[in-house]
Image (cartoon, rainbow, N blue to C red; front, top):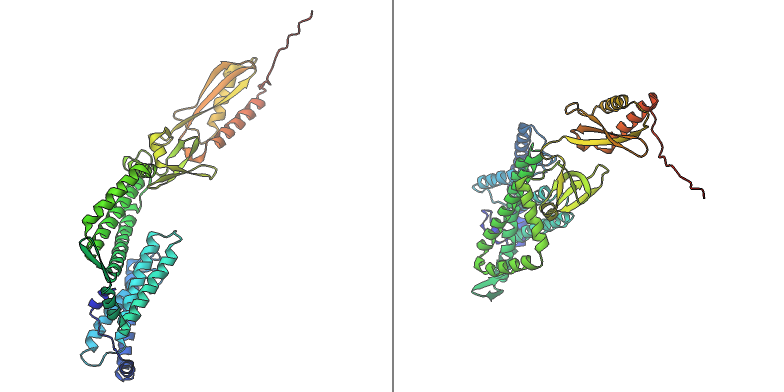
Length: 428
C-alpha cells in the first residue's frame, strides 16, 4: 500500500475546513464537466473497441458482459482523468479530482483482482470471500489516502521492527510484501490465463492433452518466478528459503510419496500422450471415456454416466487397456446354438446376414461366421464382427444383432434347442 505514495496524484487536503472550502469554489463545476467528458470518452472508446473486435466478450477480463464491466473501462477512465487533472491544474485549484483519482485507482485494482480470479478459478467456492477481501482492502486504502492518514499509519508501522537472522523486518515490510506478492500473483495468473486460452483454443484429443500440460507447466513456472520476485522486492533473503526447501523435500520423500507420485505420473501421461482426452480405456475393471486429465487424477466416464476418479499413479503402474489408442476398430462376437438337424450352410448365411443388417458393423473387415463347437445341446456358431465407434456402446449393438439372429432363425424354422440331458435309470 505504500506504493500509493508514488502515484503522481495531488496531495490530499489535510484540514476539513479547507476541504469544504475547495468544494464550494465555482471551479468545481468545471472539474465535474471535465469528469463527465472523461466518462463519456472512456465509454465511447471501450464500446468502439469492443465492437471492432467483433466477438463475444462476456468472459473477457478486459471487457466483461457490458461496456463498463471489465477492466478496460476504469483503466481508460483513469488515464483520461490524469490527462484532465494535468490540464486543469494549470488554471484552477483542484478539488474533485483529488477524490476521483484515488477512487478510480481502487476500482481498477478491484476489477483486475476480481476478474482475474473469476477467470482462473471459476468454479472455486472460496473466490467470493477473496473478492470481498480485495474490495474492502482497496476501498480502505483509498479512504486512508484521501484523508491523509495513509502515510502516518505507514510510518508508525515502520517503527515496529524485529530482527530475523541478518534481516530487519517491520510490520510495514510484511504488509508491503503481502500486497506486492498478491499483485504479482494476480498478474501472473492473468498472463497464464491468457496463454492457456490461446493454447487450448481449437485443440482436441491428444493435442488438447499436450497443450493442457504445457499451460499447467507455464502457470506453475510463472507463479514461482513471480513469488520469488515479490519476496526479493520486499528485501527477504531468498537463501534462507533453502532450509525450507530441504524440509519440503524431506516431507515429500516421507509423507507425500503417493501425492508426489500422482503429480509426476500426471505429467508423464500428458507429455508421453499414452492416454489422451477422448480415449476409451478399461482400468481396474472400469471402462469408459477419458474426460479430464488433471495433475493428480484422471476422470473416466462410463456409458452409464458414472465417473471414476483414477489416481494417475495407477495409470502408470498398472495394466490399462486403451481401446482407442492406435486403431479405433474393435472386434466383437456373439454366439448362438442351433439343433444338430439344421442345415449348416444356411445357418451360417443367415447369421452373416443378421450381422450385416446393422449399419454400425463394418463391411471391411467383413463379419465372419464359424462353427465354433459341437456342444452338448447343439451346434455352436460364433459371429465375429468389427466396429469403429466404441464410444457409442457395445452392449446395445450386441443386443440388436442377437435380436436380428433370433428373428431370422425363427422365420426360417431353425430350432434353437433347449438344454437337453439324458437320464439313465438302472433297474436292479
